[in-house]
Picture 1 (cartoon, rainbow, N blue to C red):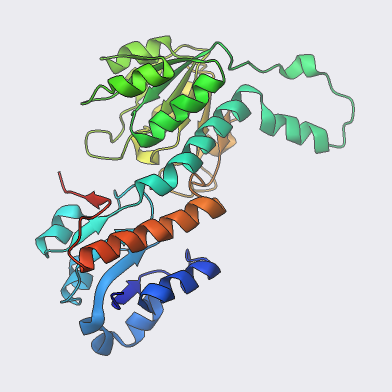
Picture 2 (tube, rainbow, N blue to C red):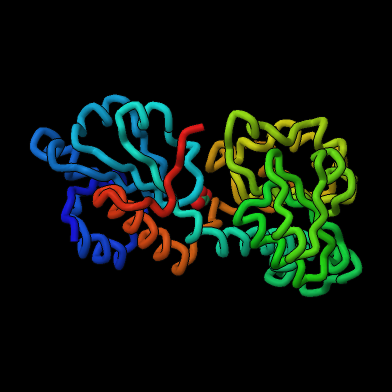
Length: 322
Ligand SMILES: O=CC(=O)O
């Protein structure tokens, strides 16, 4: 077993049991320790493991770690990392796509169902002092038979599609580059070459794309206006994929019916943000991967990635800069 220095820039996201797991494989140095004894520890660190608290990996940090070989991101999205800069230091980046797909797809379904069946309002009514209420005043919608449009049929998108199939939904999907014929057939999904077609036909639109310069504000005023006034937008990707000003306007003016977001830009939203004042929205605090199982698997997947890099073996999940 390779013993190496591992800096965890932020130990806040590391769960108790995971520290033990990491210590089995590595000599573990937390960011706090690193910052205290930078001079002495710099030479030792070969890998950095990032938990989800979005630390800054900048030129200064990279320059201070001359033996760094790998930055292992615990999670799939790497939009917080400057891949080109890191790669210019000869350092590899890895992520954990397998660990996160089920839990993130579950959150997508949970948000869709909660929004369709007005679950949050229902909970508030159930615990309110007013005990008399009429279901007829807050009818929801069934997802059975409704059309779900998936933007981004990667591994999480496909897991969403499998779940939607079990809910007897019609499934459309759009990918910018790659049609996924095998997945299409497995879940009975229809490919929309143009995202516009998907937006016009879907009752629920779910965003499952990576955040890149191409997907920044992918959903803005024009796209929201293409959606049905009865449709719901669900975002489990990154907040910046949606233009928040346009979304506020669309929700206020009935351009779309509702939104359900696990991600916002920024996170958390300032407490006076107009999205927080709307009734036709559900927001959760980026909990797509927040399960006991997913976090454990993320640590295991990250450990496997680090060991592969340090031992010169094929890397299970390397992120290549585009
Ligand atoms: O947001 C979660 C992830 O990137 O895995």
